[in-house]
Length: 149
Image (cartoon, rainbow, N blue to C red; front, side):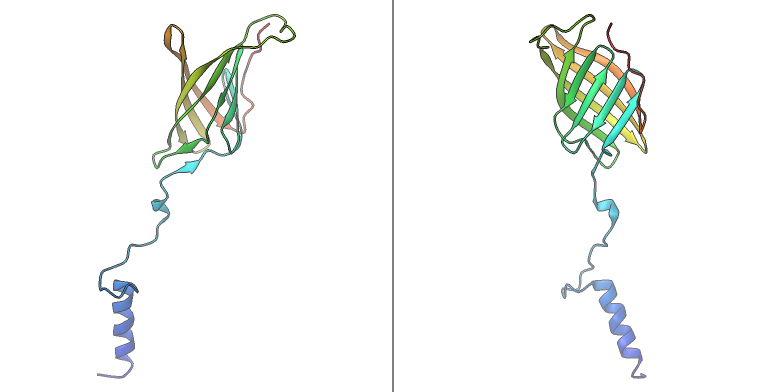
């Protein structure tokens, strides 16, 4: 056996078993091990909804309503997300000084696919759950929201 052959064999053994010393292979490092990611901060918009995503959650502006998502928007490996927040129904006409709008709990389910985010929003009112609808938002779009008159 030539003397240069032994270092090559030793290198091959170390590469296949890792440096753990126990002879078992080490797991490869992969970006696939990160199974979650945050939705990009900034403005997302679509028909009847504009959403401003922050590190802490999001502010939502609907036609004649607004809301919040009160936790970070984090997707799983499949791009799916769920989060809770609040929904505030507005009304047409002037807002009186000191007038407060009561909130109801909101639950958001969604799917992120590149720069497109599909959200389904459900609120819980005194009469039970109510589905507000499904909204398709695009990153960087201001959306098409109509204010109450």
